[in-house]
Length: 606
Image (cartoon, rainbow, N blue to C red):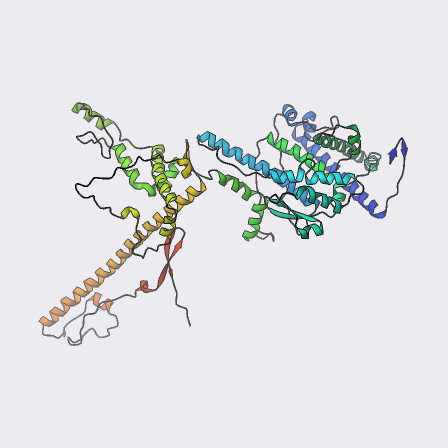
């Protein structure tokens, strides 16, 4: 200890000496890592010393450059960031709090990045998006790193006071962070008795134990360590000592600047930076660096914990998706328009729901027929012009037939589907009732097939109210320049309608195929019956006996059980060849994959 130019040597206990040795090993490893990063950057940048040393700090300039100055010095660079994985164990301590805090911060940046991509997509397609409110986890970040009220700030204050312990830190956290009942901080009576608390992160709640928080946050590194390394005879260890000294000075200055500590008295007492303050300052610098780049995210998932091939554990995958923030990103995307199709793809997928309207408009676009009153096929007024016959023949021979493009067809289809979705929103229970009706029931029919009665002659028709324009934004559909955007509820409604239409079509196809097979068997039975009737009539005409009769080949095939083809008329009877009917089993209609299927009940073997 140095004070007033004098040195005071204080002996350490055995446990303190062990901790000092571990701190020296960790600091030496950190300096070695810093050295490797500088050497790799120097090789990548082709020997440009100013650029390589600006990424992580250099000997000439111990302070890392700002992102703007880094861009001025380096034309371009590619960085790879291995993001921490979300951690939640049976016992979570200070390390898990720092790691999960980093995950929360990077997840917020990822959500903003996804929001920017969505915003750029919406603006490029020219659709409305101002009403979309994306979720944010700023409350969790404020709980951990808010100035003077966050958990890390409280921990720093407790670490600088000699009489504070882990219990006093826990009580201070309960008093300052546990006021709100609906916030992400939770501390029950049982947890307060054990000195623990819980935080609701984006991946789920995590319980932290405050035992060892202050000691881990201090992580005191004796001053003699860098002097020991620089006094070594090995040049490489001397260089590591210089790197360690420069890194400590730069981290302290950056942390003090981020905390805005300007008083000289406070600066002398807070000269020693804590682990939490250093981690927070490095995280803020990392976020600033990422904001100036164009990030690309790659998520790596392992299929099982046993590292075995051909073994896909869905529970492990779901846990990784939740901890990696994929489910949170999906939730952000689902707030807006998660489903989007190109115009041509949208028409191909959903034209089955409005095929009649599309066919009418396609026919109107391709024909030039007009009635004597000047009205076309479906109410389109045409000009009454009479060109010369020669001109008409030339135009009919040279002009190609007009067709609707994909954009026009898509607009027609959207208007037709919007009406159906609006009707479904007014009667929300009708769709569910229709889904639960089996095809075998007599009242199962499409509303379009129900005939309407004509009005009585002479009866005055009621006046129809003016139709209001359907708000596509409220329905959940927006028409872009190249794509159609669907909200989740509109997409699910269209998929239900499409599934019912496909199920109905499959039922019709199934009935036609079954009819064809039954009719084919019926024709065989009918021909056999006619052949036997003709055979019986001929036997009657010949006297009632069949002495010289030889059965036909079809007859022998139809009745192979007959050993002697010669038979008496008295014992002859007309029988039809019946095959085993496999359709007589009992079954139930089951709604599966948006269609009705048969669930045959197999007889249990005794």
